[in-house]
Length: 169
Image (cartoon, rainbow, N blue to C red; front, side):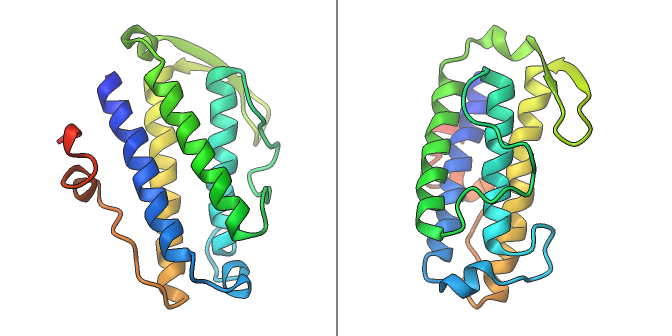
């Protein structure tokens, strides 16, 4: 299991770089333009992914900052948001790399943000959600980028495995 989650952490970083590379040419106006996606704009969507990652990492590790609302805007500007994303991706990979195989079968407990319930569950299913959540919202970010005239980044896992992620193929 550890190698599988190491792959997801590496893929996550690769896919995030692709999204941010595509968005780098946008004006500030385009970056914050309301496009009808769930979190409103590319700015809102990319911030939400970062917010959710911080919430989950706090749940998993007990460390770090965790916003209390899913629509928090941590960074309204692209450049600092990109730096924060890069830092978070490294933090994710470092944490996964530090786990033992047995850790993935362990349980953890946390309080939900939306309705303040206490949940206890195994780590591995939560990690599948964690990485799938990012994929879901990167898909929305990709759609926004094309709406704004930018090239759609290639986010296919198999493309990662055929390039930077060959060790996981």
